[in-house]
Image (cartoon, rainbow, N blue to C red; front, side):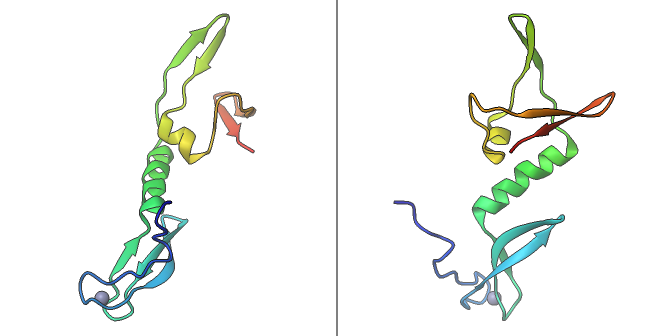
Length: 108
Ligand SMILES: [Zn+2]
């Protein structure tokens, strides 16, 4: 069984005080973490920190190569992107036009 770090006691690395759960706004996204009420030291939840890392990469734009499969062109999703959006093989994604040079992927 995976250890539930979210509910585990976290002690501040600076002053050894027990840290409190908190939700931080980082770049417009809410991220779970812990904050020390004594020295204001904060730590982000590693899962959310990883999500933030992927999300920030995507925000800047990620290049993917267009391939070919039969008569169709295909696009590959990098693994971390697929995991972030919980996309799996066989799943249907809606393509939506945004402008003449932009397509939106609608992931339900
Ligand atoms: Zn502290």
